[in-house]
Image 1 (tube, rainbow, N blue to C red):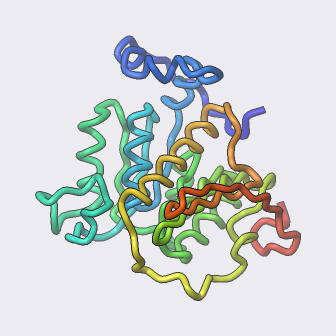
Image 2 (cartoon, rainbow, N blue to C red):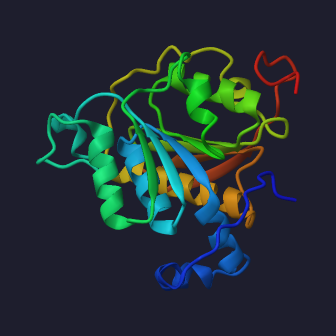
Length: 254
């Protein structure tokens, strides 16, 4: 049984032609494509992770993206934030992202919010979507999204990377551990700026987009109750089982 109840959206002939090859994927088919077309997704930050997540979801035919990211484009963004350009330096990140995504998929509905997720705006933003992909680098934001997704019972795909390592899990409130089960407190060593290759953030972003697609279309095996750990230095991948914390302050009562 699907965790999400997204009414399928009818496809026109242009959409069937655009998504023909992915409609051939077993278990997905045209019904899966209709669910993507009817779905709305929040991508929190459109940086190294979120740029690629948003691009892949737009390319796959998700009907609506809500993009939340404050600030303007800096030169140091350009090694990994693939929706940003040299021409747009000094301008809004979400404006650049919206422009690039519309060039890819003119049918896409985009809500651009030039703010990072915080305690004041999290509830209202997450109310607009069916699913959240967390691409924020700061735990303050990640904890806010986790708390609000648990409260609203919205699926959360949590993506993170550092240096050449990455991790990923799919959180279904009430069924799986939440982010606060895994991190009861803010990890002290986590910093705002860190070493990063665009290829590494792009790798975990593609995995996160795939998890979102599978969760929306209800097919395949997702990373529920699992944490995927990737070490791209050695090209090693492993999954570990994770469990709810019965004393978690965020999700233990649902």
